[in-house]
Image (cartoon, rainbow, N blue to C red):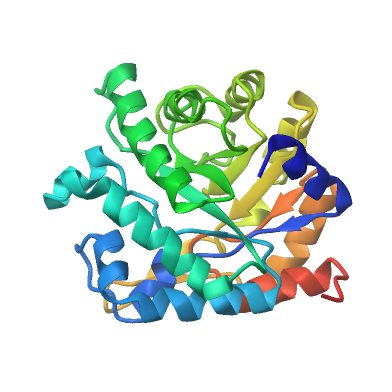
Length: 286
């Protein structure tokens, strides 16, 4: 997919992304503490069912489950030599799940480490991106980023080969966890050639309207909003339970499109039902 093809897609209508992956895999039996990417390769049925359900609910882009499949993060599980194999396999699983009915975004995320040099980040992301491109990803997404440096490295590593969507996770006031704020960050990423920018994870959508309105004033490119299903509480089993139901979530997401969001989806706590409700709230017939 070219950047122009991506822009044409967004011009047609609001683009609908998928919802959560990790929280749904936990419900499907994925143990805590395992390497998610390896577990999916060993147990592809859970992600296959989930992504098929997202496609049927209305998702136009699904995220391949390659979230932390970079050498720096995989080192935590002794799998840093398996970047290529894991990314190839994970994109193929997504392609088998949704066929050609959805675009597949190769997913990259934060390493969580502030002490790394830019060159180290660039090398890790370049290795993963090369594998994602070989696997046939239609576009790339740098998501749940904690500061602006890592998505900058993703954009540099991608070198304009595929459209790159960039989303950061923020506090409700727009501040970033690694310092700085979302408003300056999205301006920088637009200047570096991001195809779209915005926020994901963070809080529920009801806490983010002001952030979205102010981001819209700062950039000209498409704006992404992919929030959680409200704020979680921890149940007696130590599992997060998210507070916002699908219908309420969808109502908030419709408002997001009215104040400037062009691309919407859900993050932690959302399910295919949330995406179906978003599609209905936007008046989509198919």
